[in-house]
Image (cartoon, rainbow, N blue to C red; front, side):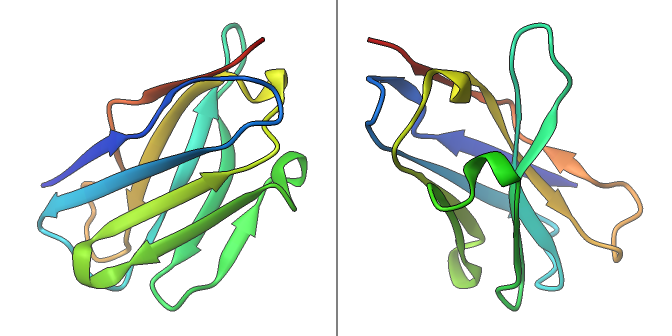
Length: 118
């Protein structure tokens, strides 16, 4: 089993920045993909950004150039630096951990609310 604990959400004005963190614990494999998804009210959950254990990344078009995903493999932690936030970025952000070495996955965090409003 894997547990994911997110932190760093909150209320920020348009144009502001936030940094999300997610710590993974339990049966962690280094060969994995970690990342972030989000779900706004009335919408489906969507990919925001993911990063592999060797540093390969993938971003949603809507956040390219504004968000940066990174990870610290030694700390089993993934980060999401969010800059130039827009009201449409408002959503619950979920951390995700996935590896082909664990058939019980993928695993999700409990979610952290990000609200962008003036």
